[in-house]
Length: 320
Image (tube, rainbow, N blue to C red; front, side, top):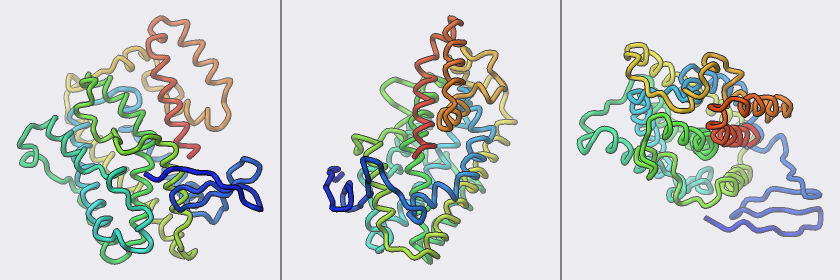
Protein backbone atom coordinates (compact mmCIF):
# COMPACT_ATOMS: atom_id res chain seq x y z
CA UNK A 1 0.00 0.00 0.00
CA UNK A 2 1.25 3.44 -0.90
CA UNK A 3 2.34 5.71 1.90
CA UNK A 4 0.12 8.62 2.86
CA UNK A 5 1.77 11.99 2.60
CA UNK A 6 0.72 15.62 3.02
CA UNK A 7 1.59 18.43 0.64
CA UNK A 8 1.12 22.17 1.02
CA UNK A 9 -0.79 23.88 -1.74
CA UNK A 10 -1.35 27.52 -2.59
CA UNK A 11 -5.09 27.32 -1.88
CA UNK A 12 -4.89 25.16 1.20
CA UNK A 13 -3.63 21.67 1.91
CA UNK A 14 -4.05 18.41 0.05
CA UNK A 15 -3.42 14.91 1.24
CA UNK A 16 -2.13 12.61 -1.47
CA UNK A 17 -3.04 8.98 -0.97
CA UNK A 18 -1.23 6.98 -3.60
CA UNK A 19 -2.40 9.23 -6.42
CA UNK A 20 -5.75 10.40 -5.08
CA UNK A 21 -6.26 13.86 -3.60
CA UNK A 22 -8.55 14.98 -0.81
CA UNK A 23 -8.59 18.76 -0.43
CA UNK A 24 -8.19 20.26 3.01
CA UNK A 25 -8.79 23.79 4.18
CA UNK A 26 -7.65 24.87 7.61
CA UNK A 27 -7.00 21.24 8.57
CA UNK A 28 -10.54 20.16 7.68
CA UNK A 29 -11.15 17.75 4.81
CA UNK A 30 -13.40 19.26 2.16
CA UNK A 31 -15.51 16.83 0.15
CA UNK A 32 -17.79 18.01 -2.62
CA UNK A 33 -21.38 16.72 -2.92
CA UNK A 34 -20.45 15.56 -6.42
CA UNK A 35 -17.61 13.35 -5.13
CA UNK A 36 -18.48 9.71 -5.68
CA UNK A 37 -17.82 8.78 -2.05
CA UNK A 38 -20.26 11.45 -0.88
CA UNK A 39 -22.87 10.44 -3.43
CA UNK A 40 -22.57 6.80 -2.32
CA UNK A 41 -22.86 7.67 1.37
CA UNK A 42 -25.95 9.81 0.78
CA UNK A 43 -27.54 7.56 -1.80
CA UNK A 44 -27.25 4.36 0.25
CA UNK A 45 -28.03 5.76 3.69
CA UNK A 46 -31.65 4.60 3.75
CA UNK A 47 -31.04 1.11 2.38
CA UNK A 48 -27.96 0.75 4.61
CA UNK A 49 -30.09 1.34 7.69
CA UNK A 50 -32.67 -1.16 6.44
CA UNK A 51 -29.96 -3.78 6.01
CA UNK A 52 -28.57 -3.13 9.48
CA UNK A 53 -32.06 -3.48 10.96
CA UNK A 54 -32.85 -6.90 9.53
CA UNK A 55 -33.49 -9.53 12.19
CA UNK A 56 -30.42 -11.49 11.12
CA UNK A 57 -28.08 -8.54 11.67
CA UNK A 58 -29.74 -7.45 14.91
CA UNK A 59 -29.47 -10.98 16.32
CA UNK A 60 -25.84 -11.12 15.23
CA UNK A 61 -25.00 -7.89 17.05
CA UNK A 62 -26.73 -9.18 20.20
CA UNK A 63 -24.52 -12.26 20.09
CA UNK A 64 -27.42 -14.57 19.18
CA UNK A 65 -25.61 -16.52 16.50
CA UNK A 66 -26.51 -19.93 15.15
CA UNK A 67 -23.33 -21.54 13.91
CA UNK A 68 -25.18 -23.19 11.03
CA UNK A 69 -26.40 -19.80 9.81
CA UNK A 70 -22.94 -18.31 10.23
CA UNK A 71 -21.53 -21.11 8.07
CA UNK A 72 -24.20 -20.60 5.42
CA UNK A 73 -23.51 -16.88 5.49
CA UNK A 74 -19.86 -17.60 4.80
CA UNK A 75 -20.87 -19.84 1.90
CA UNK A 76 -22.87 -16.96 0.41
CA UNK A 77 -19.92 -14.63 0.88
CA UNK A 78 -17.57 -17.13 -0.77
CA UNK A 79 -19.62 -17.28 -3.97
CA UNK A 80 -20.21 -13.52 -3.94
CA UNK A 81 -16.56 -12.58 -3.50
CA UNK A 82 -15.45 -15.23 -5.98
CA UNK A 83 -17.64 -13.63 -8.64
CA UNK A 84 -16.69 -10.07 -7.74
CA UNK A 85 -12.97 -10.73 -7.59
CA UNK A 86 -13.00 -12.71 -10.83
CA UNK A 87 -14.68 -9.76 -12.57
CA UNK A 88 -12.32 -7.25 -10.94
CA UNK A 89 -9.37 -9.35 -12.09
CA UNK A 90 -10.73 -9.59 -15.63
CA UNK A 91 -11.31 -5.82 -15.76
CA UNK A 92 -8.28 -4.71 -13.74
CA UNK A 93 -6.96 -2.56 -16.60
CA UNK A 94 -10.30 -0.84 -17.21
CA UNK A 95 -9.86 2.95 -16.70
CA UNK A 96 -12.71 3.06 -14.18
CA UNK A 97 -11.34 0.18 -12.10
CA UNK A 98 -7.55 0.14 -12.33
CA UNK A 99 -7.09 2.66 -9.50
CA UNK A 100 -9.25 0.50 -7.19
CA UNK A 101 -7.51 -2.80 -7.88
CA UNK A 102 -6.01 -3.96 -4.56
CA UNK A 103 -5.87 -7.77 -4.72
CA UNK A 104 -3.24 -8.18 -1.99
CA UNK A 105 -4.94 -5.83 0.43
CA UNK A 106 -8.61 -6.62 -0.15
CA UNK A 107 -9.38 -9.91 -1.87
CA UNK A 108 -11.38 -12.24 0.40
CA UNK A 109 -11.93 -15.44 -1.60
CA UNK A 110 -8.91 -17.34 -0.25
CA UNK A 111 -9.63 -16.24 3.33
CA UNK A 112 -13.22 -17.46 3.01
CA UNK A 113 -11.99 -20.78 1.59
CA UNK A 114 -9.85 -21.27 4.72
CA UNK A 115 -12.84 -20.50 6.94
CA UNK A 116 -15.05 -22.96 5.07
CA UNK A 117 -12.40 -25.64 5.37
CA UNK A 118 -12.33 -25.03 9.12
CA UNK A 119 -16.13 -25.34 9.43
CA UNK A 120 -16.81 -28.12 6.91
CA UNK A 121 -13.53 -30.03 6.63
CA UNK A 122 -11.21 -30.84 3.75
CA UNK A 123 -14.10 -31.75 1.43
CA UNK A 124 -15.93 -28.47 2.00
CA UNK A 125 -16.27 -27.79 -1.74
CA UNK A 126 -18.36 -30.94 -2.09
CA UNK A 127 -20.67 -29.85 0.72
CA UNK A 128 -21.48 -26.22 -0.10
CA UNK A 129 -24.07 -25.04 -2.60
CA UNK A 130 -24.94 -21.59 -3.89
CA UNK A 131 -28.36 -20.47 -2.63
CA UNK A 132 -31.02 -18.88 -4.91
CA UNK A 133 -30.53 -15.38 -3.46
CA UNK A 134 -26.75 -15.67 -3.72
CA UNK A 135 -27.05 -16.94 -7.29
CA UNK A 136 -29.02 -13.83 -8.26
CA UNK A 137 -26.32 -11.65 -6.66
CA UNK A 138 -23.56 -13.54 -8.48
CA UNK A 139 -25.34 -13.32 -11.83
CA UNK A 140 -25.73 -9.57 -11.47
CA UNK A 141 -22.02 -9.13 -10.73
CA UNK A 142 -21.10 -11.27 -13.73
CA UNK A 143 -23.49 -9.35 -15.97
CA UNK A 144 -22.09 -5.91 -15.18
CA UNK A 145 -18.56 -7.29 -15.35
CA UNK A 146 -19.27 -8.15 -18.99
CA UNK A 147 -21.42 -5.19 -19.98
CA UNK A 148 -20.81 -2.27 -17.56
CA UNK A 149 -17.51 -2.77 -15.67
CA UNK A 150 -17.66 0.68 -14.06
CA UNK A 151 -20.60 -0.52 -11.94
CA UNK A 152 -18.30 -3.02 -10.21
CA UNK A 153 -17.11 0.00 -8.20
CA UNK A 154 -20.45 -0.06 -6.37
CA UNK A 155 -20.10 -3.68 -5.28
CA UNK A 156 -16.43 -3.35 -4.31
CA UNK A 157 -17.13 -0.22 -2.26
CA UNK A 158 -20.18 -1.71 -0.55
CA UNK A 159 -18.46 -4.95 0.42
CA UNK A 160 -14.87 -4.01 1.18
CA UNK A 161 -15.51 -0.76 3.04
CA UNK A 162 -18.09 -2.52 5.20
CA UNK A 163 -15.66 -5.36 5.89
CA UNK A 164 -13.01 -2.88 7.04
CA UNK A 165 -15.46 -1.08 9.33
CA UNK A 166 -18.43 -2.83 10.92
CA UNK A 167 -17.03 -6.20 9.89
CA UNK A 168 -14.33 -5.88 12.53
CA UNK A 169 -17.01 -5.57 15.20
CA UNK A 170 -18.81 -8.64 13.86
CA UNK A 171 -15.58 -10.63 14.05
CA UNK A 172 -15.29 -10.02 17.79
CA UNK A 173 -18.95 -10.80 18.38
CA UNK A 174 -18.75 -14.03 16.36
CA UNK A 175 -15.58 -15.21 18.08
CA UNK A 176 -17.12 -14.73 21.51
CA UNK A 177 -20.53 -16.11 20.62
CA UNK A 178 -19.33 -19.31 18.98
CA UNK A 179 -16.30 -19.76 21.24
CA UNK A 180 -13.96 -19.86 18.25
CA UNK A 181 -10.19 -20.15 18.80
CA UNK A 182 -8.43 -16.89 19.71
CA UNK A 183 -5.92 -17.70 16.97
CA UNK A 184 -8.53 -16.75 14.37
CA UNK A 185 -9.66 -20.05 12.84
CA UNK A 186 -13.04 -19.62 11.18
CA UNK A 187 -12.65 -15.83 11.08
CA UNK A 188 -10.00 -15.32 8.39
CA UNK A 189 -12.56 -13.40 6.34
CA UNK A 190 -12.35 -10.49 8.77
CA UNK A 191 -8.54 -10.42 8.90
CA UNK A 192 -6.81 -8.04 6.45
CA UNK A 193 -3.14 -8.90 6.79
CA UNK A 194 -2.14 -6.61 3.92
CA UNK A 195 -3.61 -3.50 5.56
CA UNK A 196 -1.77 -1.94 8.49
CA UNK A 197 -4.26 0.88 9.11
CA UNK A 198 -7.89 0.41 8.12
CA UNK A 199 -8.59 4.11 8.57
CA UNK A 200 -5.74 5.18 6.27
CA UNK A 201 -6.67 2.59 3.68
CA UNK A 202 -10.31 3.68 3.62
CA UNK A 203 -9.17 7.26 3.10
CA UNK A 204 -6.97 6.06 0.24
CA UNK A 205 -9.79 4.09 -1.33
CA UNK A 206 -12.29 6.94 -1.15
CA UNK A 207 -9.69 9.30 -2.54
CA UNK A 208 -9.04 6.99 -5.47
CA UNK A 209 -12.78 6.72 -6.12
CA UNK A 210 -13.21 10.47 -6.13
CA UNK A 211 -10.41 10.86 -8.67
CA UNK A 212 -12.04 8.54 -11.19
CA UNK A 213 -12.93 10.42 -14.37
CA UNK A 214 -16.64 9.65 -14.39
CA UNK A 215 -19.48 11.75 -15.74
CA UNK A 216 -22.50 12.53 -13.57
CA UNK A 217 -24.64 9.89 -15.28
CA UNK A 218 -22.13 7.12 -14.56
CA UNK A 219 -21.78 8.25 -10.95
CA UNK A 220 -25.53 8.06 -10.49
CA UNK A 221 -25.62 4.60 -12.04
CA UNK A 222 -22.93 3.49 -9.55
CA UNK A 223 -25.02 4.82 -6.65
CA UNK A 224 -28.08 2.95 -7.95
CA UNK A 225 -25.98 -0.20 -8.26
CA UNK A 226 -24.79 0.19 -4.66
CA UNK A 227 -28.42 0.35 -3.52
CA UNK A 228 -29.02 -2.83 -5.50
CA UNK A 229 -26.03 -4.46 -3.77
CA UNK A 230 -27.56 -3.75 -0.37
CA UNK A 231 -30.85 -5.22 -1.57
CA UNK A 232 -29.09 -8.39 -2.70
CA UNK A 233 -27.52 -8.67 0.75
CA UNK A 234 -30.91 -8.21 2.41
CA UNK A 235 -32.32 -11.01 0.27
CA UNK A 236 -29.55 -13.28 1.55
CA UNK A 237 -30.28 -12.20 5.14
CA UNK A 238 -33.94 -13.04 4.57
CA UNK A 239 -32.98 -16.44 3.23
CA UNK A 240 -30.87 -17.11 6.32
CA UNK A 241 -33.72 -15.99 8.57
CA UNK A 242 -35.99 -18.56 6.93
CA UNK A 243 -33.40 -21.30 7.47
CA UNK A 244 -33.10 -20.17 11.09
CA UNK A 245 -36.79 -20.85 11.67
CA UNK A 246 -36.17 -24.53 10.96
CA UNK A 247 -33.38 -24.86 13.55
CA UNK A 248 -33.94 -25.99 17.11
CA UNK A 249 -33.25 -23.62 20.00
CA UNK A 250 -30.30 -25.74 21.06
CA UNK A 251 -28.66 -24.88 17.74
CA UNK A 252 -28.21 -21.36 19.04
CA UNK A 253 -24.72 -20.39 20.13
CA UNK A 254 -25.39 -18.15 23.10
CA UNK A 255 -22.56 -15.68 23.51
CA UNK A 256 -21.36 -14.34 26.86
CA UNK A 257 -22.37 -10.96 25.43
CA UNK A 258 -25.97 -12.10 25.11
CA UNK A 259 -26.05 -13.66 28.53
CA UNK A 260 -24.74 -10.49 30.08
CA UNK A 261 -27.33 -8.41 28.26
CA UNK A 262 -30.15 -10.61 29.51
CA UNK A 263 -32.88 -8.07 29.98
CA UNK A 264 -31.77 -6.23 26.84
CA UNK A 265 -33.09 -9.02 24.62
CA UNK A 266 -35.63 -7.70 22.12
CA UNK A 267 -34.89 -4.03 22.83
CA UNK A 268 -33.07 -2.50 19.86
CA UNK A 269 -32.31 0.64 21.85
CA UNK A 270 -30.00 -1.49 24.00
CA UNK A 271 -28.14 -2.87 20.96
CA UNK A 272 -24.59 -1.69 20.15
CA UNK A 273 -25.77 -0.82 16.63
CA UNK A 274 -28.39 1.56 18.01
CA UNK A 275 -25.87 3.06 20.40
CA UNK A 276 -23.46 3.63 17.53
CA UNK A 277 -26.14 5.54 15.63
CA UNK A 278 -26.80 7.65 18.72
CA UNK A 279 -23.10 8.41 19.03
CA UNK A 280 -22.85 9.34 15.37
CA UNK A 281 -25.73 11.78 15.80
CA UNK A 282 -24.29 13.30 18.97
CA UNK A 283 -26.26 11.40 21.61
CA UNK A 284 -23.50 11.54 24.21
CA UNK A 285 -25.84 11.77 27.20
CA UNK A 286 -27.48 8.53 26.09
CA UNK A 287 -24.11 6.79 25.93
CA UNK A 288 -23.10 8.00 29.38
CA UNK A 289 -26.41 6.87 30.85
CA UNK A 290 -26.02 3.43 29.29
CA UNK A 291 -22.45 3.08 30.57
CA UNK A 292 -23.42 4.04 34.14
CA UNK A 293 -26.30 1.56 34.13
CA UNK A 294 -24.03 -1.24 32.95
CA UNK A 295 -21.37 -0.45 35.55
CA UNK A 296 -23.94 -0.81 38.34
CA UNK A 297 -24.60 -4.35 37.20
CA UNK A 298 -21.69 -6.79 37.84
CA UNK A 299 -22.45 -8.68 34.65
CA UNK A 300 -22.54 -5.40 32.77
CA UNK A 301 -18.96 -4.69 33.75
CA UNK A 302 -17.88 -7.83 31.90
CA UNK A 303 -19.26 -6.61 28.58
CA UNK A 304 -18.52 -2.89 28.81
CA UNK A 305 -15.21 -3.17 26.98
CA UNK A 306 -16.77 -5.22 24.18
CA UNK A 307 -19.69 -2.79 23.96
CA UNK A 308 -17.32 0.17 23.59
CA UNK A 309 -15.40 -1.65 20.86
CA UNK A 310 -18.64 -2.31 18.98
CA UNK A 311 -19.73 1.31 19.42
CA UNK A 312 -16.44 2.64 18.06
CA UNK A 313 -16.42 0.34 15.05
CA UNK A 314 -20.00 0.95 14.00
CA UNK A 315 -19.84 4.70 14.61
CA UNK A 316 -16.76 4.77 12.37
CA UNK A 317 -18.73 3.09 9.59
CA UNK A 318 -21.60 5.60 9.87
CA UNK A 319 -19.17 8.50 9.89
CA UNK A 320 -17.12 7.09 7.00
